[in-house]
Amino acid sequence: MASFDYDLFVIGGGSGGVRSGRLAAAMGKKVAIAEEFRYGGTCVIRGCVPKKLYVYASQFAEHFEDAEGFGWTVGESTFDWKKLVAAKDKEITRLEGLYQKGLANAGAEILHTRAELTGPNTIKLLDSGRTVTAERIVIAVGGHPTPHDALPGNELCISSNEAFDLPELPKSIVIAGGGYIAVEFANIFHGLGVETTLIYRGKEILSRFDQDMRRGLHAAMEQKGIRILCEDLIQSVTKNAEGNLVAETMKNGALIADQVILALGRVPNTKGLGLEAAGVTVNERGAIVIDAFSRTSAPGIYALGDVTDRVQLTPVAIHEAMCFIETEYKGNPTSPDHDLIATAVFSQPEIGTVGLSEDEAGKKFEDLEIYRAEFRPMKATLSGRSEKTIMKLIVNATDRKVLGAHILGHEAGEMAQLLGITLKAGCTKDDFDRTMAVHPTASEELVTMYNPSYRIKNGERIG
Image 1 (cartoon, rainbow, N blue to C red):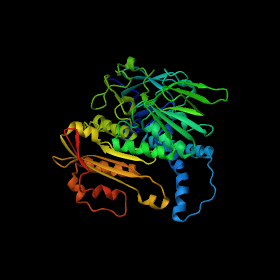
Image 2: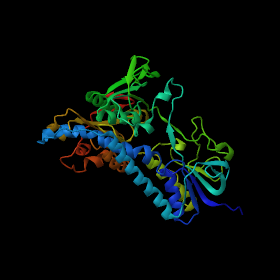
Image 3: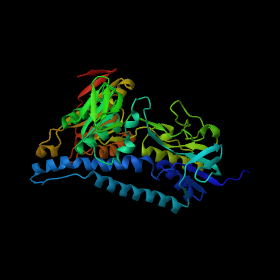
Image 4: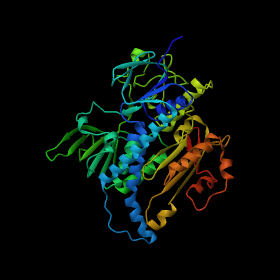
């Protein structure tokens, strides 16, 4: 019988890696986990957590303006970028400590080094050059922003990684991309007083979201003063004599700004990981190919989270890790469930969504009922803002099952989480209709839209 140094070796200290390592160690398995940068992964260190903190920071200017409508007099306000960065650093350091504490308390060995595969069951630790063996190996190394090497001047640009730690708050910024990362940063920087331009090659931002959500957000962002240039792209970036960046575009000439962010997608961190030596197959994007139980092509090697390019969300990586533990250590084969994942875009206003968009549902079902409400939120009646909230339910007319729920407005992300439970349970529109409303709230619209706004039959809108 083969003898190994470890029962489980985890490469990558992000959400999926830490969860799998901690749970296995708590079961008495001999576990080691290696991370070359900081524990917590993209989410904690340079993703979801700092982003949400910066979203909060960027909203205060509007809060101060709104206060007057409610009888408050707010004096002169100033913003200190460096103070925000320092506060963010303190918080993510605290969270990183909690991640490591959880691993240590479970009995896992914590390694601060890059780890690379050298064979089916062997791992080289680069800090010491030592090679260790493990019965099972989990690869959970995540991904990184696409560098867009083909763009002349890409080295002058930054990605979402660097955006959190700029030495100074720029006066102007150009953001290339139309996905949720680009949209969120556009709202963050605009809210902090930065002149912001978003440029995207597609016809509409957030192309994978329901049309009412993306169009409603587009209008709201432009109304705030964010410049959005669709069906255009940056062709080159240079630096002028004044030290500013000049982004030459295909249709809109030169865009001059202090910073240019490339938010053009993410790619898996598989380069130089030794996958070929271990017999692990990757696809054309460099993502590790896995089966329904997160098993790679190499026996005993598994992959979780963004490195598999399935669904790039932190809770998904954690869920996949828990399924791995159930399958490999509890004798309960469990395949990750990627159906009906609720998600949010922390734009301003937010988008919260779960299930099929109108377009997607129209391609799969012959007869749909679309329930849609658009209204001015109660807070805006005194603040004086013209913003609108949009709520939308996609219903299969045949069995009345709710196929999708989409919200644009304040706290949409919070509502999406609860709607995720509702849709996962298979609730029908009748279940919504017989649920009593909580008044006065925005979410009560979800249970008071009794009549369809229009129908979709065989892909065509009626009414």
